[in-house]
Image (tube, rainbow, N blue to C red; front, side):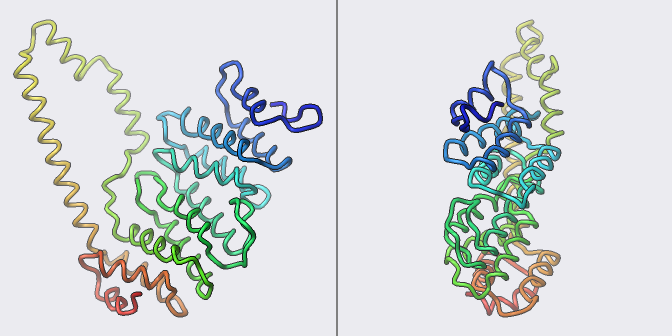
Length: 320
């Protein structure tokens, strides 16, 4: 990629032509060069859009199965972005938001890296990597809440719209670090919803593992299953009406079982388990008064959970 032209950086359009020219697919080297170029020469909205598009193509579209960011790619990208102290521009944060927003499955390491970068910005007061203005360290702004919201419900491996423990841990760390600050009121609500989701979210929207998807794709590629059924029909070796009714009955049975399983998972999730209760109690009682976000969490759990261990229910009196 020829980054410089006539002593000046090539425009986003020129860079796009270089990367996607001759109908070639971009690769890691293009992402690496764009990150380096942005850090050396600065970024603008068009450059940010290009970086996000190239990264999306490399890490989400071209992989097999499509949409599943691999551990190797996540580790490589984290190393690139962490080099030099972490995220350096809104373009790099936009890259992460785009990947997390479009992927079917994201390695937990990548989502944790992203949310910890937001935490670091809050604690230092530096918002340049997110397009915001410098702010007093240790204060959660409305813009910070939106950045956290974009990352908290990442589709980490096997989960969709279900907050994982590293994210919940990061949110607790932010709540404690900003305990005495005049935080944006939206933070308390996001904190309660996200940590509450971790504690009692029904994980029935889980995505299948990449190996499962590949196995299904392999099976579908074989000349069997429904394709063989159709072949048999046309060859006169099957009764169409009987076969169709059999397929419909099987689909109805499958739908009923799926609905029943979903109901069981929703019911189970509404009861906070002992291990989860111990985890959250340890965070709520690790020193100092409860923050506004923690009090809101207790209110959320009190209102939404069907049951919880007595030790946790005893804290509900401190709810906001």
